[in-house]
Every structure is written in C-alpha cells, then in structure tokens.
Amino acid sequence: MKREGSVTKVALKNNKGVAYEYWQCRYYDNTGKQKRKLFPPTQEGQREAKAFQKAMTKLKGNGELVSTSQTVSSWLDEYITTFKKNKLRESSRERIIQSYAKIEASAIGNVPLDKVNAAMVQRFYNQLAGTWTDNNGKEQKRLSSSSIKKIHVLLSEAYRKALQLNLIARNPMDAIEAPKVTTKEMTIFTDEEITKIFEAISTLENYKHNTSGLHNYRLLFMMLLACGFRIGELLALKWEDINLAGREIHVHSTKSTDKQEFHSAKTKSGDRLIPIIYDHLLQDLKDYRGRDGVTRLTGFVFANRTGGAVSYQRVLLTWQRICELAGIEGKTIHTFRHTCATRLLEKGVPTAEVARILGHSEAATTLRLYTHAIKNYNEKIIEQLRGADIVTKPVKKVSR
Image 1 (spheres, one colour):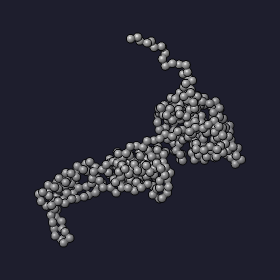
Image 2 (cartoon, one colour):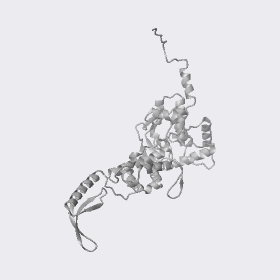
Image 3 (cartoon, helix red, strand yellow):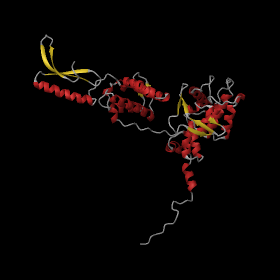
Image 4 (cartoon, helix red, strand yellow):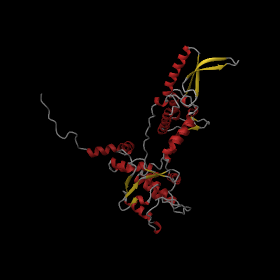
C-alpha cells in the first residue's frame, strides 16, 4: 500500500497501449481528495518529485491544500446545525436564522466558500445598508446597523470554524472590520400618550364582545411602564416571584417569543429584584391575585386558559389595537421600558440603581441610552450647583 505523500515509480500506458515510466507523487488535500503529480523517470525527476512532496506536506500543514464544493450558504447551514444549534437558547437561534436567511437570499450565498474575498463581503454589507433585490427578485428593505453587525458575527464565526477544519486556506473575514452600530435615539411616551393608551385599554375592556375578562391588560402594561420589564420577562413572571409584603419582584427568567419555553437570565445582572414603587400598582397586584375570591400563590401572573403563559403574539396584537385607538405611531412595547428608565432618572434615582432595576450590567449603558432623553437635564445640573464655586478658597497672588 502506497503511503500518503509517497514518491514511487509507476508504469502508465498511453492510448496506444505503450507503457511509459514516471516518478509519481501521490497526496491528499485537506478535504481528503486524492491527487497525484507525475515527473520524468530520471534522477532529476525523482529529486523534483521529492521536493514537490515536501512542499505539499508543508502546504497541507498550513491548511492551504484546499478544494471544497461548499458554498457560503451550504456551509452556514451545516455550521449552524452542527456547531451552534444545541448551544443556543431559542431567541438566539431565531436571530441567527434571520441572519442566515439574508445571506442565503443574496448573491454571496451562492459563492463557493473558498472563493469569497474581503471586497465581496464589504460590498454585501454596503448592499444591506440600502434597499436591495434578493435572488428571487424580491425587493428587500435596508437593514439596521445592528442587524448587519449580527450577520458579520455569524460570517466571522463560520469562517473561523471552516479554517480550523481546513475547509479553506485563508479567512477573508480577517480583513473586514466589524460594522459600527449606530445607536438609535430612544423614544419615550409623553404624558398625553400614556393617558391615551390607558383610555384605549378601558375602551377595549368595555367592548361588548370582550366577555372573557381573562387577561388584565391594564395591569400588564402598567407593570411594563412602572417596572421596566422586558416583555419576555413579564410573561415568564409567576406569583411565587412576587413578594407583596416586601414590595419586590424577582426577575430571573424570560419566555420565548412564540413557544412555552423559558430560559434563565442571560447575565448575572439580569437576575434581579425589582421594587414595587407605586402604591396603586401594589394594590392592583393584590386585587388581581385575589380575584374571584381565590388567592393565587403559584402559576403565571398572566396565564392563558390552560395555565400556560400568555403568548407574545396575543400581547402584540392587543398593543397594535391600542395604538389604533390611541393614535400612537412609531412606538413599540419596548417603549414602556425606555419610558420607565427615563422617568426614574428624571426623578433623581441614581443611575446605578436604575441600571440594577433594568438589568444592565453597567451603569454606563444606562447613561448612554437614556440621559439624552431627559428634558432640561443641563438646567437641572445648573440649578443644583447654582452659586457654588469650583474654587473653595481664594487663591493668593504670588508676588515675584
């Protein structure tokens, strides 16, 4: 049996049946494909074959003998399924699939994995930043900078793994800088909008066909506004997480968007205690827990008919109906969280405490996201320090 990379003398017949001798170097590329190269049957030919063998061994060790039939899309599909799928929570998987779908629908998805270069990737990112046409001729909307960044992360991770597996000789992503994420200015509700929102909720509650009374959307949206929950955190909330006597709510898990799947907080700061600040919210929670003469000690606070958590889709549809009735445009369920944070900062709650309530790992994140939304912030600083002087004692002039 011939060794991989061996140099041997072989006799090969031509199309007329005449045998000729050659020096043969047989080797395999990094994907396991067998290859060979022939040299003249002389001593010089033998030396050339051995030099070639040595060069091929070195190239293979460097991962440069690559021949792959994988396209970008086919490799991403394999990478996600084999190396990522079981390591991610549902929400993270959904985001990766969304990024993969954009790549698959674009021209770069059909390019062989080892033929992509940095210029191709950069043109792809530039394309995503505007309206573009996918492989099916459908016009796609521009993506946000954060969405493009997620695509960049997926491509970088997939190419890094391909290089480790010797599927490619070089990683084109090494020459691409991560797209900068432009932080959108946070929008919050005005006092007038909040009034209209809860008036719209009253309209829905009093609607003649709303006979079930199963969901207390007034309480749900009030908790979003007063406590700064993420919607997944609120839908995962159970009565055993609420300490009414101590006026605290333990946030430690979140619900997947469309399934009855729950995951623990991603970070240590996400597992936190939220204060029940407002007396009327405390009373509303007590009333809701004891509705129908039954005191609920366990189970989801906002439960469906079978006892599971209310779906995000149901809450979203309700929010869309509220927006129609209240005339609210361009604001989402997450705007309640932004409004909560801004109001707390306006009331003088220390930034570190607001960060803790929101589950931010660093107070700097809270400052960056919300301080610009506080009205007259500079005026408040001036008012607090009016009359003060940075120099506490007069400085004596030194005579020379």
